[in-house]
Length: 210
Image (cartoon, rainbow, N blue to C red; front, top):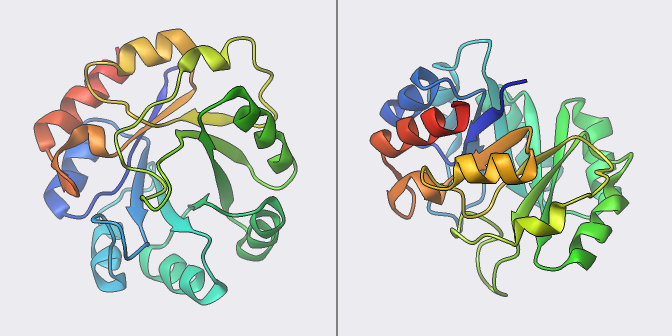
């Protein structure tokens, strides 16, 4: 099976078009005001209208309340919900309520963090393994990676995706090393925080699909 690819934190029609042109299977829209990739509802609606049916629109949230979720789902016509810093019980409740594919992001630094991911079995549809960021920082999109060797021999409790520090230069190695069925990139295809680079998007997708 070819590796699925998600370009996250898209904010402009041009970079969204580059992701779709390059064959991204998933496109990510961030709804978290502290992030430089945050989208307002009107902007999200405009971008969502450009996404063809074969691509999955993923909304990215940090422990959101119901009103935030409802507004974003309606505006961006989201197919999937990606939740950061959200307890398993809340993930399960959101999944039951919104009836959309629900991802639980798990911040990884040590093997104990991977063991902790098992708490999401039955609560989420997919795990997103991401690098743990420093206290007080954003929960993702910081260009950090964890030691992929920790995934060796791991019995994943759910379908999963790999994120954290991926870029056009290392994504092929990451896929070969981990067997990731889906790879997710944000800062690794940017020229500055929140500013996506169309050439880097194309290079990432080409490398991931080769």
